[in-house]
Length: 314
Image (cartoon, rainbow, N blue to C red):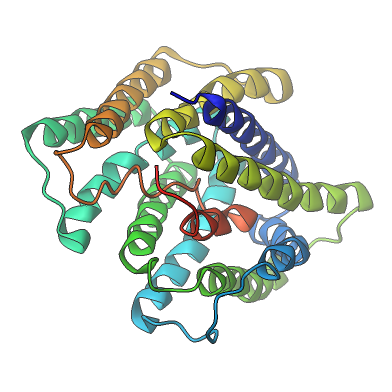
């Protein structure tokens, strides 16, 4: 078994966690839409480098305009929600909620991909959702817009991934990349005018760093999935909770409470069960979780899945 992909993935998710720390830092001074706008703006030159390598013949018109419209709207909403969630909540708590995405992807794959979920995976989904409830602690902790944003991000991100799985084999990667990026640029540009603040030069550099970190991490994730099987690489996403714990403590004086630790453990256990059950084969026709390989599609990272579809499958 080739484990080099696991190493690439660990580094990639470490960079993604650093990417999220910069988002959280800048979110204390600027509205999420403004940070996302400039991060997207700085992403365009990097994306152009990828597009120059696309030799697929065709136009920029989508094969499935309806599905691409839904995917674009979901990706745009997801990006705004996740940026706001990192600004409003402790890092570890955001990751705990986002870790529910494999569960939501599995659920959405039933009506959208015709996936059949048996007793084992169904039970894992229920257990994982109980983990989310443990993290949120309704009734004993005050829930706010940050929690709603994180939950919305998990739902919208899952929808993006499942639609990508549904139409991605026939759509050009350039179409899958450009439409969400363009929508982010236009929508966030319109929103930020209502709460725009002049950007200091160091903060502008930070917004550029978000794009660069997402780009480099995305490349590493591509290398990871091309070097090793998906079952080896996919679980590495959970390493982000370790980065979140360290970064949260060092930079934001955030401390994990028992409920978050317990809930994260339950969510990760259920997510790993679904991943390994799909990897064993014979239990999932579409393998929706393993084959939706990119991270939460915010700013630069939304192109990863499109690039991966051109490489070999794990």
